[in-house]
Image (cartoon, rainbow, N blue to C red; front, side):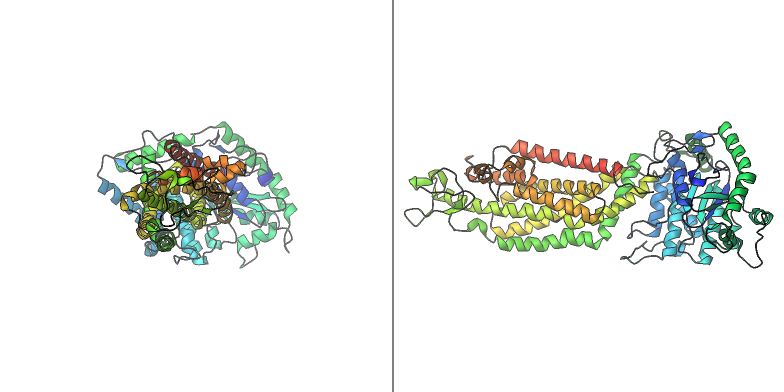
Length: 639
């Protein structure tokens, strides 16, 4: 019930009928504040605001979200899910399965409810069709609109707010949709508040209560029974003309600038005639406190016990923020995430197909690198090669040294010919490991826009208290890790097979490389949660990964950075590429325990493997924690 100043008033409380049955409509012109009012009542308003919403005379608390369903103007859902899958997931996350019955029996009962709801909303014939969007073929826009309503209804909330539920529907579909909402309101005891414009008269008669809003600024012109609206207008000297839709005529009378508009008259009439009654009802509602949202949920739980003859698994969930436990949330979301990943050709193509092609290209670039017989090249600051062959070295440049005999090369520190060969191969292998971490680290950047799309859907669903953000993060990370393990295994195995490096070295190389990949994926996930759009997330991720590459200690080397007194030399400790390259090169240690002089050439600390491992794991945990915080607090839906 609103005061004369509409959404700018000082008193907002729940409509009557929250514990009973009432079917309300807000009829409006443009810029009247109807969506703002809906967002305030449903506690969806993200912008700064003040005031209180009361339910049965009690201030709304966090459990109010579990008792309220909100169906907005945008139908944002996963395009590759089917209609049945969307309804089934919403139902599974709203009501836990009853205790004491077989799993098959519980699934059968839930499937029957799903079938009944789909039939009532006119979606049964497209139940196995994909939802679709602008790029994925699916159901029509009107069917998608009805699916959004079905998802809100299957949760069996006590109050439901629908913002323009008939937008995009034909007149016939709009009538059937509103009729279905009316039937649900009667059957389930749900109070439904609908924002609608220009409904057919037959549709308008389905509503119990009507609130008319005018614009500039938003003010109330009528607040009373739908059936009495025409008589009210007639009493004010504006009877509905013959053969004219009453709702259209109502809007013509209260829309500023219209030919028959008389906004001041209707605003004044409401203030003088209806507002005293509304104010009295507000005072009576505030003084006669009813049940809290938690008590309403408990009544519903008891009803389910009586209806099902089994105790639902909600004993410890009465005061919880969600209808089901974390185990059910994780299982349900994991099934959906796996299903969506397998159905997405872009995700599979980029992660599997493209990496296999890139693996062949990298393998050809480093073909038989282990057996190459080129000169040993490197940067050795302030030192000499074996046998006293002095070398004048330059900063950040490579020096080729042919020894006196002209027939063979010795490795550093006067080791044997065999060691010299391994040293040369190991030096060339350094570039191979560098290429591996580059290609693996950059491969996830094209998928960041998909992460933003998933985040938007998660924001909408978690705001309905279907599941926790933490459950979404765990399941998406788990699927991401498994997919990364498989795709990068193919990439590393293909490229490794071309190099001639003995296969016993492969597990160690793969282990350190995948640790680097998982860390960079966590960094990308953090930017995907922080950035407002996919483009911005890529603009943030690319410079970050380039910084990791520069400070990896290969191009340029840490020795070169130290000699040039560059401050970035100390930042290599936060580069996952730097630590992974160190670990990958350390596995080439021979049986005698000797470490070749790559630590001297590049400045790599090959002995510091435990810190390298801990830093990578620490970065992964820190980025995932930051991602969770950003998903909870940033980029909320702008109501």
